Image (tube, rainbow, N blue to C red; front, side, top):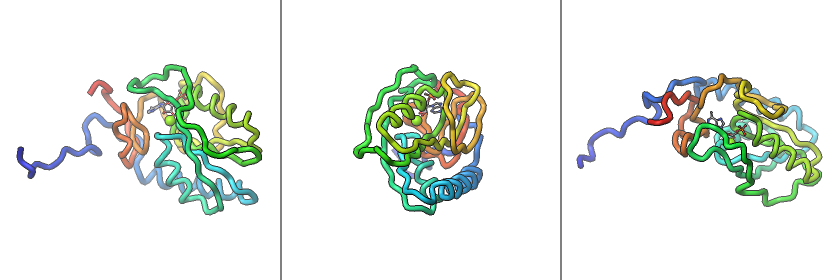
Length: 187
Ligand code: IMP
Ligand code: MG
């Protein structure tokens, strides 16, 4: 096989319909970070990045938050290789530290039905955190089944399956620097 053929571009894959550009994301996340820094100026919040989808958002949000803070990770079971939620929530990786008395800011990629977040926020509150708030990059509000208060929101989006900037379809497309609608999930 020849080694000179150019690799096919993942970022300009024809199965992707760009929805939110990298520039739009960076501008909005910078505003969100500034707001978080103002709101938490008298305390030392603990950011909880929900793996894996919120990885890029958490990285950019914390860089935009000029404040002393901590970072921890949790992993929650999600869709697997399907584009619809199973409705079951499971903690796959729990926190390594106690959150009693801490001001928690959960950092999540997207709120869809709200099933995952309503479970996770209640779970963290039950552990005695002083406050629990939510920063979500995307809100697919039309599909909500459980009420979830999003304290810091990036963008409201229509009911479509999106990928990129951390969000995946069957573990693919997390590396896109922008957010796109996946046109045909079977491809
Ligand atoms: P919910 O419990 O239905 O709110 O689902 C939340 C989780 O489903 C998110 O944290 C994502 O991991 C996943 N999810 C929901 N919608 C999308 C999407 O459009 N693209 C990729 N992942 C999604
Ligand atoms: Mg997620």
